[in-house]
Length: 263
Image 1 (cartoon, rainbow, N blue to C red):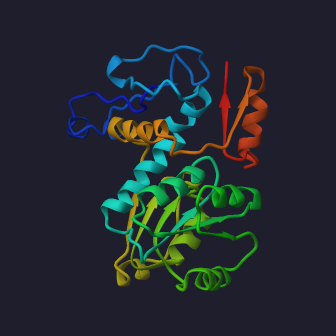
Image 2 (image 1 turned 120 degrees about the vertical axis):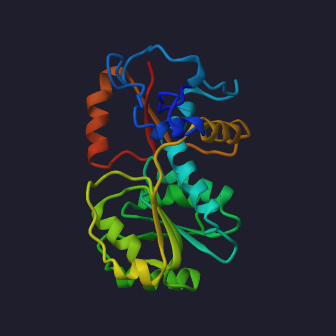
């Protein structure tokens, strides 16, 4: 398996292993050897051994969706935002969110996991992967969603959030549901700007942070979970001549889980 985010090896971020946030980072799949190339040269230090029992189509999403959400959940755990009496919301149950739900159960210290999405089929996946509750937000006002959350969990605000969409409207909704001393981690990049009120962030002493991909240690931990059979996948494989068709489905949000190109 190839770890993403090749750093220059000399900056302070690389020195502690976070090569993916190196100022001079290089990304495999971007450049002369594209993301759809069958082969590409890789520095040996960015190769990670994987269990022989794992299939190619299961490995592929773990370097991206499976890695990104794992690091995000780790940030929430390290912030002490997760505990048995806490409620964590997972927003956006697509290729990333399906893994985020599983990590929230694995690393959440017993926190109640609630999945939020507009697609009932995607919410069914979240439920199958361990979400305690699901809420379909399509066409609903924020107040109604908050009331539904209270009916399900006994509280109308969330203690922790991982946003796997990053769309402006989702950010506004999610931050509005964030409670006092709540922690919000964004791993989604659908939008490019956000507009949220400042006062609640200060008066509620909330923490909002980004989480970008993951480092070699994060990926090694993900692979250990996968080798132990603790990660489930919703995968659709396709052939090289179907790339454009799958990209169109990705643009419209009609892919359930993760699509994997298999040569």
